[in-house]
Structure formats: structure tokens, C-alpha cells
Image 1 (cartoon, rainbow, N blue to C red):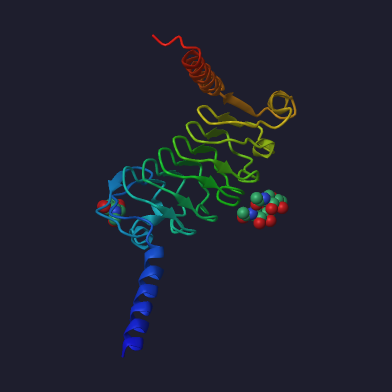
Image 2 (image 1 turned 180 degrees about the vertical axis):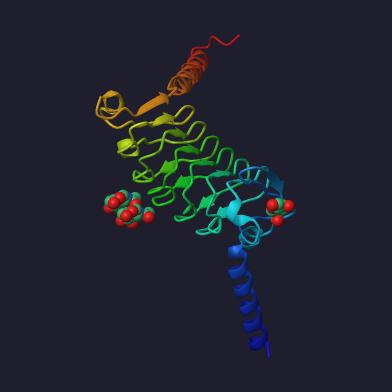
Length: 240
Ligand SMILES: *[C@@H]1O[C@H](CO)[C@@H](O)[C@H](O)[C@H]1NC(C)=O
Ligand SMILES: *[C@@H]1O[C@H](CO)[C@@H](O)[C@H](O)[C@H]1NC(C)=O
Ligand SMILES: *[C@@H]1O[C@H](CO)[C@@H](O)[C@H](O)[C@H]1NC(C)=O
């Protein structure tokens, strides 16, 4: 009896967790544009409901703002053949699985979310020209995360926690502008600046903003000197 009910509970938990995995959107309203008009949906609870929008084939832009989109699974945006712009800023997004954006997208905005890592295959091989990943919690981006994105023009990575910059990010991109300001950059690849200014590759890093890192280093230095001075004055009986 007990064994039977625990099996049942296990089964229910399993089914529930399998179902839960499919839910991408939680109580969000979605704004979307067709070529000529903008609409807003009622509350949407899952990627499946998103796909059943009756005019899905005409939707060119989807925008979700200030909602809850914790994870994007492969195929969540699959049923939208005309989709070019996806705006998902400020939605508590944490995880993006490889294959999530299989559409022929032009721009993706993922600013002000809670993304921590960008792995291979999330954006690679795509036609994306504009990619905003600023104001997230990104501390690691795989060297091949931006592979085969030959159309990429604007990559905004400012206000993250990026420590290592890889030269591979710039590969095969002739018109790229990249903003790396307000990160925690500790390592730039050797010859990185000459890499960005050579005539063979006109990729540019428009905003590196290392002064922020320099300022932090200076503050740490000052606080060390101060605490050293305080310790010294304590030891040296000069306390008033
Ligand atoms: C689809 O488009 C029609 C107009 O073409 C519009 O009235 C309707 O609200 C749109 N959205 C849905 C969910 O049908
Ligand atoms: C990108 O395309 C290449 C060649 O078509 C393929 O070998 C590779 O697996 C693709 N990568 C991803 C992440 O889809
Ligand atoms: C990029 O394309 C090349 C050749 O088409 C392929 O071998 C490689 O796996 C691709 N990179 C990624 C990250 O998909």
C-alpha cells in the first residue's frame, strides 16, 4: 500500500517536472508586431500557447518586458517564420539552451536579465546582426559562442562580470562593434588591440572602458595603504 502510493507520488512528481520543463513563460503578456500592426496578448503561460497565436506566420517582432521568462528551450520561437526581432529585456532570464533561436533573426535584445553563461551553439551559425546582452550577470562566454556569425555588427556586453576576452569572438566578423565596458576584465588576448585595428579585420571594440577597472584597482590600493597606516599608527603609540 505504502509502496504503491509512493510510486504514485513519484510518478506524479515525474510528470509534473516533465511538464514544468516545457513552460517557458510565466504569466507574461506578449507584445507582437505584424508588418503593419501591434498587438498584445492576454496572459500567456507556456511556449506552446505562444505558438498557437492565430497569426503566428505574420509576426515579425515579439516583445516581452518585465515578465518572467526563466529559461528558453530549443524551439520556443519555432512557429514564427517571419520573426526577425526578439526583445526579451528585463525578464529574469537565466538560461538559454543551444538551439533556442533557430529563426532567421536580425536582432535579439536580452538586456537586464540574469544570464550567467553563454555556451557554444546558443547564437553560433545565426544571421543575427544586433545582439544585446548588457546588464546581465555573465561571467563566462565560451570562445566559440559567436562562431559563424558573419553578419554580427553590434555586440553589447557592457555591465557584466566578464573576466576573460577571447580573440575567437572577433573571428570572421568584418563589421563588428563590441561594447565591453563595465566588466571585470582580467585577461585580454595578446595582440588584441592590433587584432582589432589591422586592415584584414575591421572589427572594432568601441567601448572597452578599462578606466572602471583602473579606478577599482586604485580604490583597493588606497584602502590597503590606509589600513596599513592605521595599523602602523596603532603600533607606533601615536593614537590620540
Ligand atoms: C491577429 O490578427 C488579427 C487581425 O489580422 C487581430 O484582430 C488579432 O487580434 C490578432 N491576434 C490574434 C491572437 O488573433
Ligand atoms: C553550425 O554549422 C556547421 C556547418 O553547417 C555545423 O557543422 C555545426 O554543427 C553548426 N553548429 C551549430 C551549433 O548548430
Ligand atoms: C562553424 O562552421 C564550421 C564550418 O561550417 C563548423 O565546423 C563549426 O562547427 C561551426 N562552429 C560552431 C560553433 O557551430
